[in-house]
Length: 226
Image 1 (spheres, rainbow, N blue to C red):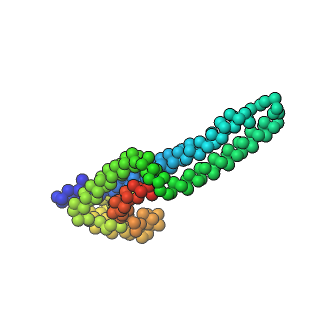
Image 2 (spheres, helix red, strand yellow; image 1 turned 60 degrees about the vertical axis):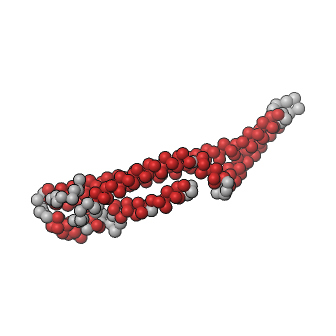
Image 3 (tube, one colour; image 1 turned 135 degrees about the vertical axis):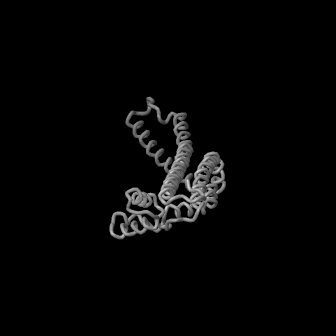
């Protein structure tokens, strides 16, 4: 934990590493919750559209059954009955697709959009609460990181890069954090493998970016745009 009191450079690196790991875990969990929510919404929508699209098909078959047009009778041969049933099956599939696509299109317009939002209200509320809890934890982690002035350049704020700094300290290669940063920069310049870790967009910038857009994100969720 980073306290306002002075801690040595190695302990500082350990504390920053732990915070960054937790931020990465939160970001992964957040993205997974968003994907799971979208999948659940789409599954519910598909199920609802499928049921509604089947209603006229079922009505059609019940009506034809009532008229005895799809039953074997003395005046109806098996071949004619089979042809009639096959034609009705093909017609049913065609009508199902037409109704499904039509309903999916109409869902974009009022009042069906309002109806859809009402049906998804409970699920949406649970999702917003879950994302809010993750974001609260991320904000607490960032506040902890900012409890004292950063000793590391922001572009080195990566859990993998911090691990390399810790390794320098533990192997006795460096004594101060400035020496560790210098050694790391040399290794990044001379090693193509590690240079991939030096990204212009760090975990901190990613988290700060989606936290800054949190209100707008929740508004889009409420509108059914997410």
